[in-house]
Length: 212
Image (cartoon, rainbow, N blue to C red; front, side):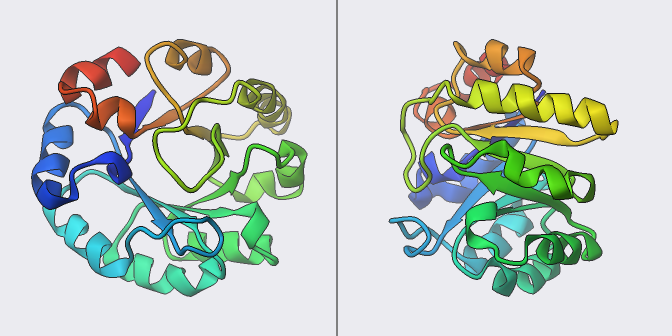
């Protein structure tokens, strides 16, 4: 299982130090929540910050686009050199086209689902994706409580992955901690996004180890 700390919960005054610390302490991926204040009720950061982060870490960058018109971001992210990009099913009218475009840039393409969106919405294009990002909180803010409804969605998704014989990764984002991490693993999680649990822990290495 891969652990992807979300820098949304980090100390932005010491961002370089924070990223280097999670890299040293066992993180596998850096998760970047890009919010535009329209698709979700919060505004975070954009390309200038991501470009600087790319310069200070060799860890893969996982960009979660919680934005309207996500297609407008793909070329810039490709030029920066990120490894993962997820777009929301709820914000993408031409989802198959967008997934195809992301993959054409040699980026792993994922689709994110809000808690209330049925996983069945993705079945027609599962074979075209590299990963699915299931939100286990309502997107927009860090530090929210985990929603157990994601377990049923994971089971349905895993069944379809097996049926199609796919090597599709399942990523879980929201309220992840050491108590639900083992259960998420049993339900097929490959990547766990953890923000507050890591950055508010006081001991990043121990927090990451406890999730693994």
